[in-house]
Image 1 (cartoon, helix red, strand yellow):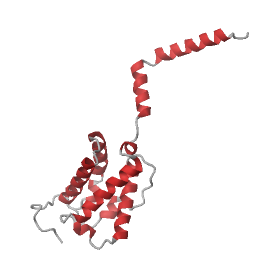
Image 2 (cartoon, one colour):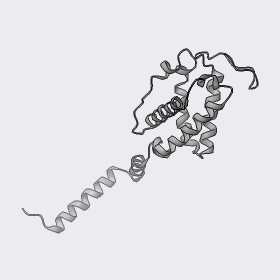
Image 3 (spheres, rainbow, N blue to C red):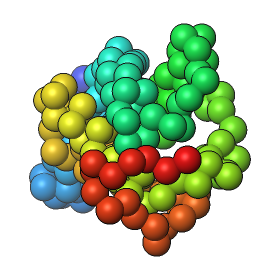
Image 4 (cartoon, helix red, strand yellow):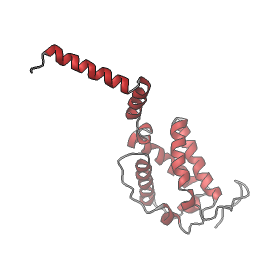
Length: 171
């Protein structure tokens, strides 16, 4: 039996109504929103946004007397490599297409004697740079959740802190 065009339209209407009954509007809207949600990488501005933040962040680390001892002996080429490795890392862990090109956090920081206070200085610089670039709180929170997950692999001396910001740096 051949279906008439009006029968086809009627079948389509019935199928659409059945789907609407099976998937409540709120669930459909939530599903559509989830599909439309951008990755953290995209919400940070993609590679350009990540790159700009990492460049400023790294420059602050290189010049902070409280932690500059970790960057002694780094020439311009080594500093550029440090920045690129961190750009790739942030790009990758936030859902971007970059490949991580550095060693594990454990291997890269092993033996440096990084204290909890040193880590907090670095985290403070990241927070300041994210604020300077007007990164929204939600995205900052998501990024910090990732970064703070690296803390155990980076901090060698979690119980050691410095007496004050004016105290001489160790080493």
